[in-house]
Length: 189
Image (cartoon, rainbow, N blue to C red; front, side, top):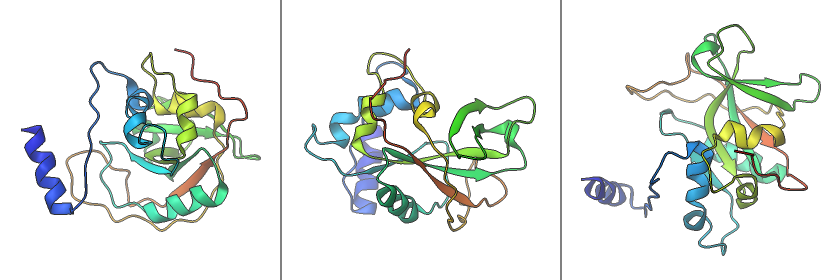
């Protein structure tokens, strides 16, 4: 059934789709690390790539995200947005002066910030040096120590009908560069 659905999507979209399956739960960054050989063609491809969390269905400014990512030459760029209901999402806590991401708080019980991680990223293959292959790790955990928020303009997305969660109301999404790490430090599991 899975293979049939993928085949149908390939035909409809006229693209090649390659899937990477986890044998055990690895977290969002761990799943990405598992797909590293597919994304980088075994290390031969150093082109940036986009990651969209599967529970986020919305029309995003992906071209703008990629353009900002390439312009700043970073390891990663995360899309952020503001919301009136931060307790429903992963909140980004940043230094207001420098924009550096201090940490992420998953569904906080008390107000921390209205800035949330939109679950959409542009990465350079060098991001894989920050992710361990032998343990489960979330994208927030893998990138938090290396991230810097720089607020850049982006056009608002057009929400698509879905039964999954989407940021509400129609948010303005901001590409947020994550600086290059001078000495890769994989997240300790």
